[in-house]
Image 1 (tube, one colour):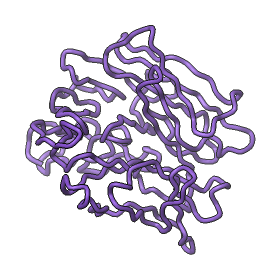
Image 2: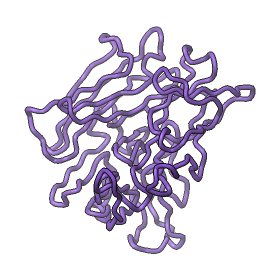
Image 3: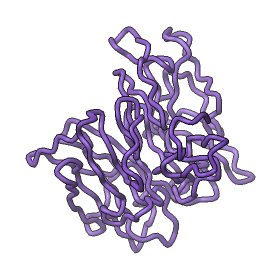
Length: 326
């Protein structure tokens, strides 16, 4: 899933949500649908298809600005492939009351495989910035209130899920944001090979890649692919989706190929699913994915560090000399 506007302000234009299949197994008989939690009036939406070299395919949802109740566009959008494979993405309001500080999803790993020793102790607490005088922050899963306060405090085994975070008494006025917490089945560096056992990963998943929860394989962000995300695509490619697990299958889909997109993927939030979660397109970060990476950072969500000896490190593609020490 992807969106061109992960954070909506008061004067935004149309919102685009994309549900894309990147397995390289295009079948004209398959279909993808996009739905929103709580629904959305039909007169506000238009749909279309995306087919890129019969490799990357899917659909998009175009949501126009409503005359009233502008908050109706906020929330969770879910893409479904043939009623079987599902993924989702979030659209939040631009608000000074609650600030996610550029965090769209958080992936946590248990310290051990013992379920009795998986207390919620992340290295950086999950929370929100809030305006002065706003203390009673409410965290809800669906309609269930699970936490009160600016930081989430739950055992790890109970933390996974989609949270609606709002200031007490202000949720109905649109002052709420959504955040997903993803909990891995095994400690970092391991994957779940059977329902009750964890195996050591043999693949490193470099360049911002993330190991899958139940297999020894990597999810790779553009512009990297290959078994360990070690393969850099051709010079100048700053696309939305790039290569797949099967190194013999290649696809190129640029943000400018999509309706509502732009050449540099500014403003694009990408949700690859599994343990990867949602991150800004390479070269960007922030609540709206509109802030360029600072000097010394590159990649998806600006999460990668440039080598200190490489002044030509590119914020989209990384080191000018791949393999140099960081």
